[in-house]
Amino acid sequence: GTRAVCVRAESESSEQLNLTFFTKVLDGMLELYWGRTPSAVTATQHLQSLQPDTPLTYDHVAFRSFGVDGCGISAVEKFFLENGYTKRDVLRFEKKKLTAYWYAPPSTEGKAMLPRVFVSELCVDELSDTAQKIITKYTSQAKHNVDHAAMSGVLGVPPWPTPSREDYLQLAEESEYAAWTLVNGFILNHTTISVHALEGAVQGIDAVNEEITGLENVVLNGNGKLNISPDGLLLQSSTTADNITVTFAGGETEELPGAYIEFAERRVLPEFAGLPISQIAEEHRRDGFEVGNADKIFESTNQGAAKL
Ligand code: OOG
Ligand code: NI
Image 1 (cartoon, helix red, strand yellow):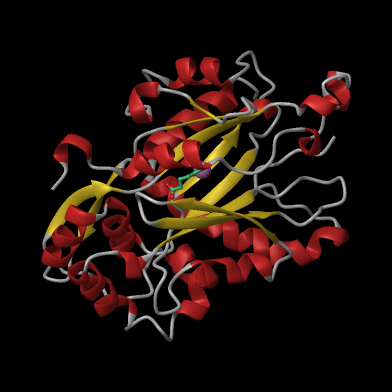
Image 2: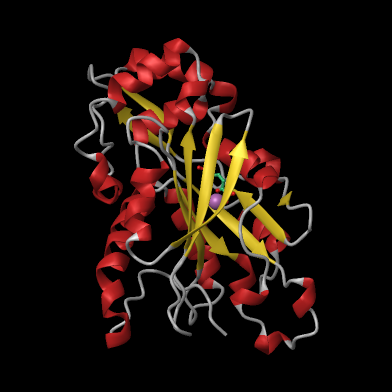
């Protein structure tokens, strides 16, 4: 059946030529991501070494944004909608003041599947006046760039000016998500490996977590506690983000959380439980996302004990 495939694997077939530019842009974002996330490279290389002849598959990629001044979901989704993605369910996170949507990839007609996309935005108007003022000081200067969110993601340059350390620190007191987004913009926040598509000796998300724990700099978020949807069919885990060196507007530098990697196991839906395993394809498995799981996964970029 169809399965998500590594977006690096360029197809040469003419039917997929219209996806070439799209996959190259995605590759550009991933290139930057791998460079900034050595623990994700370590984890994926290890899993890849267990199935040397079959590329790992990507379940989804994810972005963050500010829901103000056109710097929110509408900016990030544009590139994906224009490339055949379909906007699906909304997810709401009351406490974190976030809204998110996920996007289903276009059909590639039995060929390699593209990853789903998860885009969240901070509901800026729900924050304190102080936080709103800080955020809009930057987002109000991004207006000409938000049409080019994908470019921002490939370059790793936010569409707004470089923040001051003072603004960053103040924002971090109210929202870790806000602080992360101010510094990172529309960079790839994480990518997710499809656990159910693994073909090596390691089967199931518990085995994956066990396998990568202890690899250099690989640390599981939430002490390795698995996130399980109420229906029991979507199981997710993530690592804690690698630090990156951030340079603030005044030239000060600081080590702050950048990107992380996630693992997702989508189990077969009850109505397809009787299908022989050889016939099970992605569409027979639990689709979409889960608020309870996502709420914990967002915390993969928290500064934890080192919270400023
Ligand atoms: C996204 C967290 C949620 C998922 O798969 O539910 C998520 C983020 O950290 O921006 O990745
Ligand atoms: Ni995710």
